[in-house]
Image 1 (cartoon, each protein chain N blue to C red):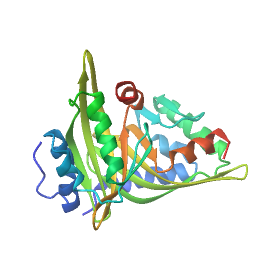
Image 2: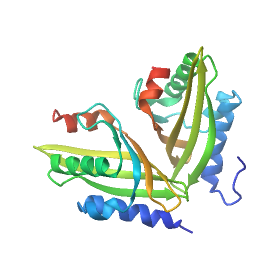
Image 3: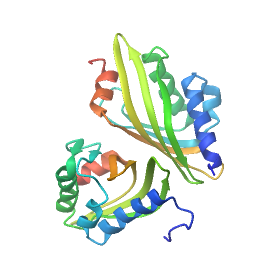
Image 4: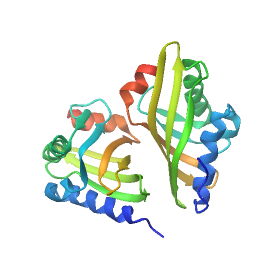
Length: 131
Length: 133
C-alpha cells in the first residue's frame, strides 16, 4: 500500500516499524522506541518494559512462528501526540495459519513511541497461535 | 483538518457516558462484533447490535452508572478509528482508573462494525469487573 502524501510525520515514522519488521530488520524497528518503552499486550507478560522487554516480545513471535510472522500496514492515523496503525498480521507454523487484524496504539515522545498498546482483534486466535 | 468521523465517534462515546443507548444504537451496524478482552465476567465476544447494547447496559449497571470515558484523543479515517480513552468507574467502594486503547472498524456510513480494546493496566480492569479489587 502506498503512503498517503498527507500522512502526519508521526504516522510516517510509525509506518517504518512494521515495514522494518516485515523485511526482518528488527534492529531498525527497535530504533523507533526509547530505552524506557512500555508495551502493553493482551497475553504473555502483558506489560513489557524497556527495549529488552520489547525484544522479548518480538523474539517470542519469531520463535513461535519460525520467523514467518509478518505485519502488513492497512492504515496509519497520527497526530502530534498519538498514532494508531492498523495491521494485518499473518504467520504460519506447520499446517497452522494465523491472519488477524491488529491495532497498535502509541504515544509520541521525543525519543520515539513511548507507551504502546498492541491489540489483536481476535485475542483467542492470537493466543492459540502464539501462546 | 479533523476527519468527520472524529466528531461522529466522540458523539457515540458521549451517548454511552450518559446511558443514552437509543442514540448509541444508531452508531452500531446490525452485525457489529464487540470484543471485550481480559479475563473477567464481562469478557467475551458480543455479536449484533442488541447483544452489544445489552453488554453496555450491563457494564453501566454493574458500575452504578458511574462508568465514564473521557477521550484524550480520537483519530479516525473513513475506515478506522482509534480512541485513547481515560476510563473511570466506581463499584462497591472499588475504583477503576485506566487508559483504554479502543479500536473501531467503520462501514461506509460510519457505523461501527467491530470494536476491540486493551487497557494499560488490564489486571486492574479484570479485578474491577470481577469485584475483587
